[in-house]
Image 1 (cartoon, helix red, strand yellow):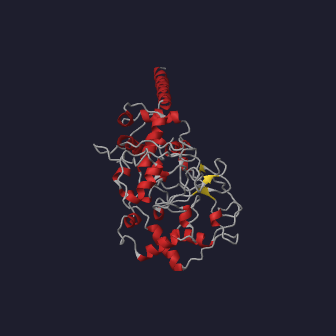
Image 2 (cartoon, rainbow, N blue to C red):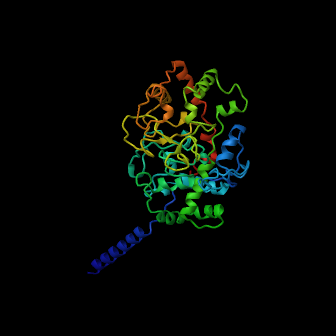
Image 3 (cartoon, rainbow, N blue to C red):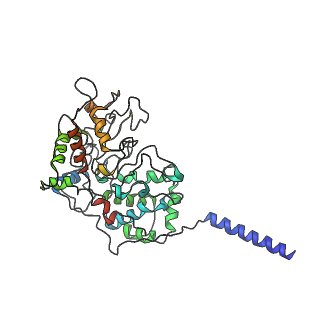
Length: 399
């Protein structure tokens, strides 16, 4: 009897212990942070002259030395259209840790960096990314390129700033599964390193959803890509590009090819300013809302509507050689395939962008020679920023 009573008592104690563990799960830190004693410089920029306008006009309040005159990001009509945060060294450091921490997913298996790999200019090499519990996304993970310059993000331009973007993948049931952000806040508070990091970034150790979002956005905005061979050429080094790449640059900027009419400026991105070329026609002010999307004639029949009617974000072409596969669904594996599509493969969709319709009312046909196609690919490859993909301050801080 005594033995039975002892066994029963032990069983009850074990059951209570297990229930307690289930109620209050411990966050086990099997990895350690490796951060420098002095924070890296994220807050100030040293921009080449040809990129100064891009950043001063599009991200005037983000960086501490990026003040070339205060420019209203809404150009008078939409003064609050951009909500990018002020980047600080400690804020971006916290964002870096959050970006690489798998604790942001419900099952501690997926980090932001799982689908945005530094060596690939923060893109994913697969058409769909593997997320929470092995689920796969329907769309390709977009590369992170000069996010501070974008007014609209995701393939369907559904958010208007980096800060608005950051927690969407975290909460997504396919990507990271952390649908209840209050669980994430409690989870991070149990770690040994986050209270101190939040204190350095914000002055006290309080962890909130808003601060998590802000710190991640600071890190994303600090990822500035301005150090390609194209940039060296633009700063006066005529030897930075080969003759083939210079021919490709000529092909890219020709009025007939219209490449630069969609991928415009020195960041090679859609003009998504209010009233810009790719504004939202339903936004008012004569087509004046920022969206930056277009239907590029990938299909005759729309299977993924994107923003609407098969319209998808026109991304920056910087680092494009590193970020394949291409298009919203990753259907093209190489830049050669992309060039071939724009040369002779555009479909006459009812909502095809007007720039891709020829004078005859048919889809634009470039009819490039094999040399011109090769040159165009070579020019696109010259837009790669090799320093970004090895920069320590953007790397994984966990051992």
